[in-house]
Length: 250
Image 1 (tube, rainbow, N blue to C red):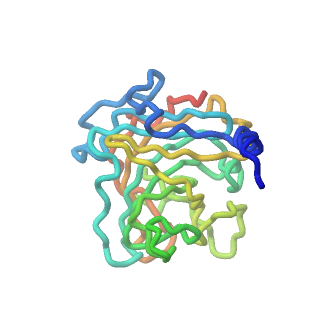
Image 2: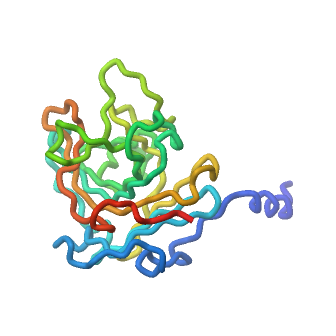
Image 3: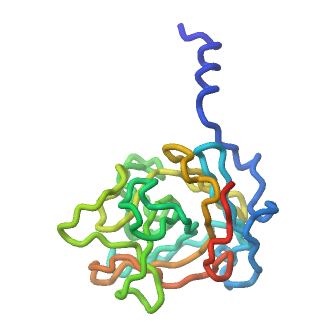
């Protein structure tokens, strides 16, 4: 028989993540990146504030919007080529190596995305229907590495491609796409105007004073499904206004 005292002792060793009910919205945090309302006509992507905080090696990224976060998802295109992607993104100053990518390979960003035309989380069944391959429209998380790509619209970033034959270092939960993308299974949570994603790191090294920002954007898969495979098509809003990553993780 497992004794209650043993269970309590074991639980004390595990990191805890505050529930949404216990966590103030980004807009209520004094050290959040505060943004101006009305930057985009789509209220669900109009950022009011972006914030990140940590408890040991667990970091919670969150964002407050003018509308109901997560309430607007893309209209399906009917195919992978040309498929639209909506996203809430937190670009960071972290080296991509901290989550398993090649070191110094671009801008490491956490993203919560919805894209009904394809599923890129093969290890997870977000809608719990027994089929892990039909969940793309449900909001889910990714680590992505962003870089400037001459094949994307002028001045736009794209998710870094993996050239044919290349074998870069990739996270264990890489979904198999020829991109620097990870599908770690961290669940986005919604609370009215708030979206939050709590993520775990192997340790606390390098987390204090990490710079971050908040972005809402639309991406699109290349219609030919060739490099560049996934580009930012439209930036809805940027918390800082200039992508200067003014936030600091304490």
